Length: 58
Image 1 (tube, rainbow, N blue to C red):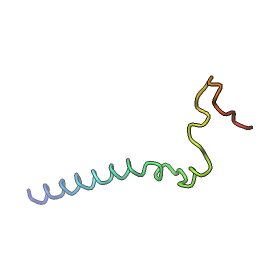
Image 2 (cartoon, rainbow, N blue to C red):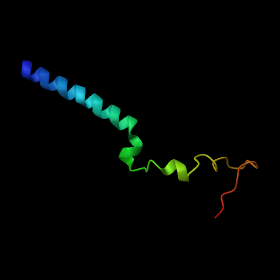
Image 3 (cartoon, helix red, strand yellow):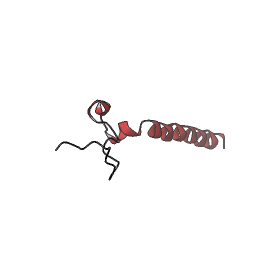
Image 4 (cartoon, rainbow, N blue to C red):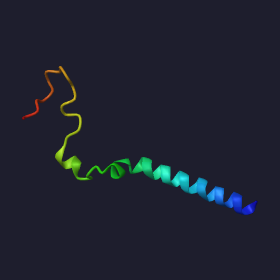
């Protein structure tokens, strides 16, 4: 009885730690390079139809 409850408690605890880490480090687990921010300005070319939006040089 005690062993079962202790095992479930540890599983429950480490499961919460695991899911919290997955949320906080989602970009790391997805393989996104941490230096990507230096290369890409996110949202710069997202406003479709807006004449003030910069054009992407191809």
